[in-house]
Image (tube, rainbow, N blue to C red):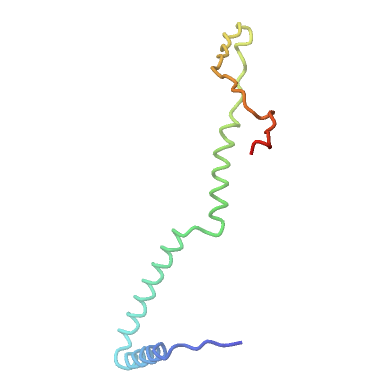
Length: 116
């Protein structure tokens, strides 16, 4: 297996960061501690904000369950008693005659192949 190494620019940045941390540790440890604490707090706040608004692993499943509950709760309404059973039936809708005509086609007629 080929193990990928970092680019030399990345190594230079890491070495400079370590040198800066060590020098600040010896010159002003209190400032180093407060800077690390503030950076940690900012990272934690950003992390929790993204965790809050990012849908979870079951986000689509939960959305489907909510939609299904909404759909089937309407159909599961309490059944009403039919009080109009002793009333005469309402007038039925009359069927409307459509204005459709049949156009005769040439489907069943055989072609005269000799005329080609």
